[in-house]
Length: 340
Ligand code: SAH
Ligand code: SF4
Image (cartoon, rainbow, N blue to C red; front, side, top):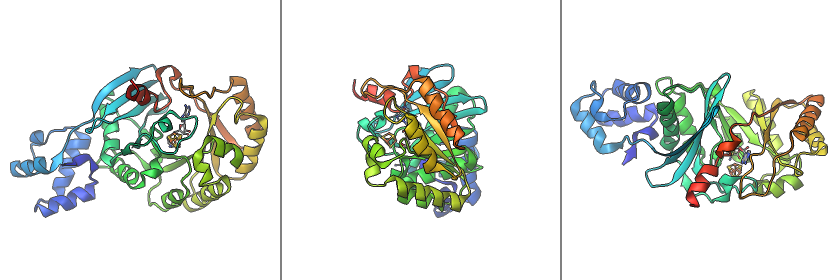
């Protein structure tokens, strides 16, 4: 059976046309699901009984299963079970400007970055677009509030699941769907260059974040396997090309690993790499995990790295630490459950 959550509005309209239903029926369905949040065809009273029966035969409208939840003041972390028993995570974050959700894009990740818990367990499969959509529906239902932004920064490499990610974006961006503005949607990639080029050409104004984490090939290849396939120079060129095409500012993520990439030399190298580009650097205090030996940089080290970038004229912020106490580095909750 197909999941109704995998369907964009135009796809649903097309499917219904084959059943001789009027185009507005697709809109009614979207309204039940995404506005009224009714996940039962039997309750969709303005849709003809016959058609409802047909929909029930064709579509599943199952939600995800909530397996575990960790709550703190600023973050809720959710572990969801998919229909096939696989586990994924999503995180709710409370910012001063609103609520945001970090969603997973795959079950596990094949990129194998040495510091990352999601990559420690190999990829099992890609997520369908509807499985990503439902992470949002589940969390909104739990908190009884609407979120304002979405980041694709959970488990998985989104550009290794490109088509489903783009479909997910179209579904949540649809004004008749969850209606999250494109400018409030950000996709983070470890740097799969051909997909960055493709993303630049999409006719939708969503944001891009790049996990750079090191200012030279030698260091980056040590902590991110993907750098052996797509080196820094080509990566920076593709980001420049993206900025030229989209006119949008790109976020550069830089996780601060003690004694690895947090020296002033690295800071200077990073500054010269990014000089003149329309980017801003987000310094991420590393979230330590019990299985990986990296440590988080000291606050003073992070601050001098930050000050130095500022001095060099680079836009930079330090990411607030969201719940290091609650297995907040994405992938930790799943890993601890899978390994039980
Ligand atoms: N695969 C994509 C998106 C998911 S990872 C990517 O790599 O960009 C989202 C971000 O979290 C990446 O920048 C990643 O490097 C970072 N990250 C992974 N493990 C982390 C940890 N333990 N502490 C802090 N950030 C981490
Ligand atoms: Fe995958 Fe991103 Fe983790 Fe690297 S940092 S292993 S790309 S999820």
